[in-house]
Image (cartoon, rainbow over all chains, first blue to last red; front, side, top):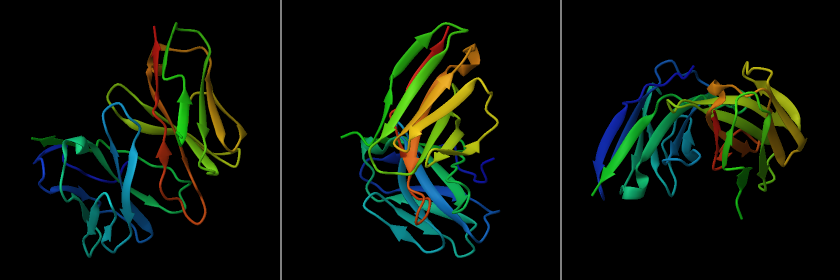
Length: 111
Length: 114
């Protein structure tokens, strides 16, 4: 079962930063935090992952708290095309690649 | 070029029939997966193959039989289809070494069992 907790839905104004929280209070030392998103009717898309340091790529930033019990995915300038369900997933590197998806956060970016 | 492709995109069939869904990846990955997304949008892993060897089987009914003829292909055959098999099926692939990172998903196959 998924070991993460996310709000079911969030709204964000176009052009503003979208901050999506995730709680993973039972994360163990060798588990990574992954973020995927699923735009309506499409396959999930990888966004970013991290262990304990903050990470940034061309899509987003991932901020992980020092105790690693929670994280925040930041989309710096949300666009309408970022409207999607965002999944926060905790996974160890040696778990056969299995992704366990929870309910995710449905992000609506509004004009 | 599509990285992970699935055929067909839509599949409508009668209960009791046998059907197959095909998946191909051109990314050179050595691991492929099948996921099922039901009507409530829950996405759940079904199978995983690494270099044609089954490594994950999430207690899926044995009416579902994955087949990997080579590491670029992972097909899903379903026997005696039931109403509850109606869902969107996603294929995915990733590279194991040096670590399990990004999984690339296909566009999905929407299966409707009548």
